Length: 169
Image (cartoon, rainbow, N blue to C red; front, side, top):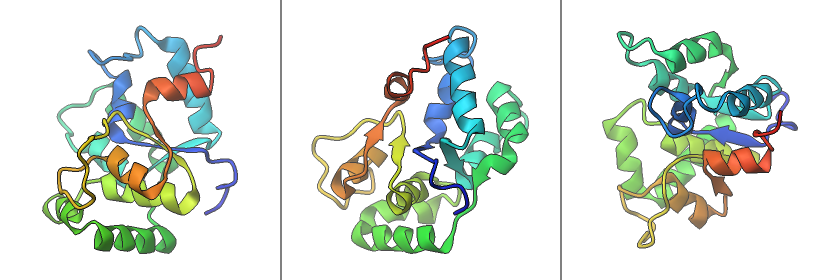
């Protein structure tokens, strides 16, 4: 993957949505944070995948700020590569119950996000919470559950703000 030496983070749909209207880190109230986030995005330090783009834009009648942002940044969402696809297949073979989600929802990005983070040794940013009772093959498992099992660092948007000093002017 070209430029992968600067990528540090791959971000989930729900973390990008945090800047939307009526969300925890709504852009209107956190303009400095989002301006600094966009700088990281434009520099390729934070990326996301095409399935996240699809999740953000699948509702054409809901053309909100995040929809417009995603459309404007469409070319910045990374396509699946053969190495990520191989990692994804390995993950689905290991966690077969969890992989059922991809069979029922063609735009489900979670599996590919974990595979992308694992393949490129990235930190995964998501608002999902880890489940204390994760057994390893539960279709209801969340991204942080698999990240813990696969030794992938997983943080939320607030932790990204802190790690990258997104609050600074």
